[in-house]
Length: 101
Image (tube, rainbow, N blue to C red; front, side, top):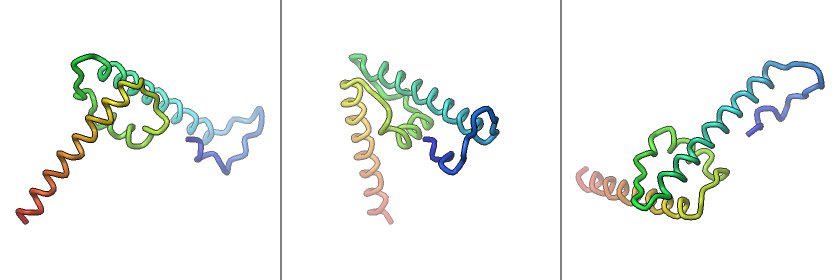
């Protein structure tokens, strides 16, 4: 995530506002990712799971950082299943729209 700092030289003992801002942003993103991981692992791991907990922000972070997030095996399987069903449902809606127009 620190691609924003690739061209910045950080000298020991010297504060750089740009570096501090990027570090703060990265910490905030990591905190949000941990919260979303916990939420998904908790909700999806229960017997009668529903992904109603996944709102826009969670979907955004899954799309952006899903490859570095960690889920329990059962949560990962169920997440894949539910998201695949959602994609199929959306494809059906798009097909219906194409037939009408």
